[in-house]
Length: 414
Image (tube, rainbow, N blue to C red; front, side, top):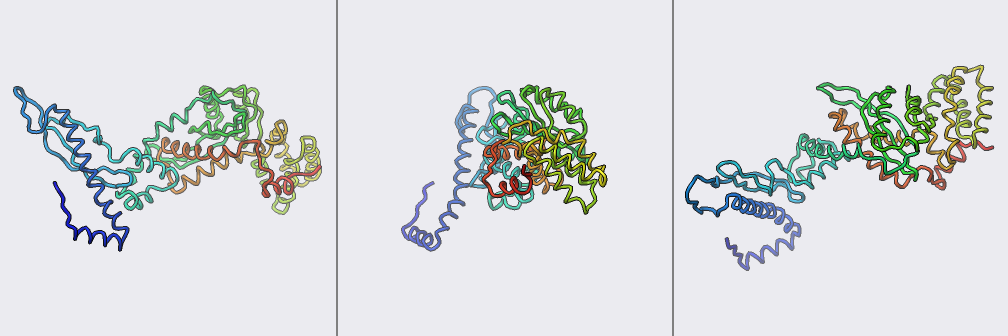
């Protein structure tokens, strides 16, 4: 079809564009989907011609043959263009399947990935549904967002079960986190076990994400065995940092013969202070910090002796509670001093768990185990990117906040 535009019409169009520059963009947005749709339709027509082996209206002599059978309308969503209308050609026998736009495909692959990344980054399905019309030219339902995210399940499983033999991990941070999860048409509180490994160069990686009861020693043993089956060398693991979960320390020592245990000092302090009257909490906490942040193990034991003398009569239960965990709280002294600030507590894994909770809070309920793994893996990978600039043992002591933390509030002078 030949289109002719008069000089007068051209001049009028240019004048309108000069007065309203955005008009040209509006024209493009209106025309481009239509033009592209026609182009895709023509491609599928050619594809059908090759499938049938003859041109339209070309006769075939002898025998029954397949024929064209018209078209049916359909739309496909393309990034930057929104809904593109196409005419899908079909054959009489229903044998033709176009490869240009597969039958089940409503979005281009790149757009599916963008939708999934927006969802995993924290944009809820309801919000995506609200903004999708303006951003994509098509309203995306919550179900469509979920289907786009499911495409990542295979990649997530490959990452979660990846080979670990390429790196030598020396420390393991272990903890569990609870989620409200939909299982078998009911809502259950499910625990996910998390292990962060620290390689010899100080880099941190999430190497274990597995559903299981965090209070169960058997579940932790299964997770450790799974890590070893994926290539984790048990002989290189020298320390496990944990919060004193029942049976976990024993299982860790059995699975990693060369590994020592560092119990999280923050958790121990909370347990001790729970047995202390309110009016004494501040004084007791200060004395415990003197022990935990001493300059050496002998100095820490010296402060422990003073702590016992001072509080044994008034709060013996608190003293006994600290005594039961003291050795495990001071294990970090056996390792390089520049790593002490990272090894004293489970702050590394607590920070990761906080990100897990922040992302899943808007959802209230996680839609199954696979959905949970997908979210947690995405968050873990984001955290690993941040950790690259903050390896264990490379603490920036020149920062004012760290300087006051180390020199003022916690470190006991000799």
